[in-house]
Image (cartoon, rainbow, N blue to C red):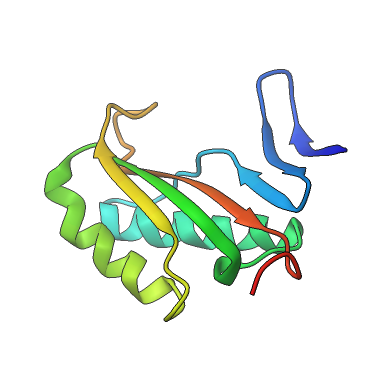
Length: 117
């Protein structure tokens, strides 16, 4: 069974299938990549909780930066957010994002609680 949450004509914010949670790309508000990353990760926390998951259950993260010059600043926020011993598989690259003011977008795949250690 596929469970889609917060669905509109274009996408679902959360899709759950066979114990796996897929989040649509998340962006955050703020004047710089540090603020946007913090806000983005808070949004991810909320969506994961709603889906019955948490940051300890993340399998993979795909991170897009508008400028790789922001890599260290984004990582400072990311590294403080990821629970020790629970780092997911991760990729990070540079891409033009949907808005000129956006600095970071993060896509998450996780398991539901109880589906992993």
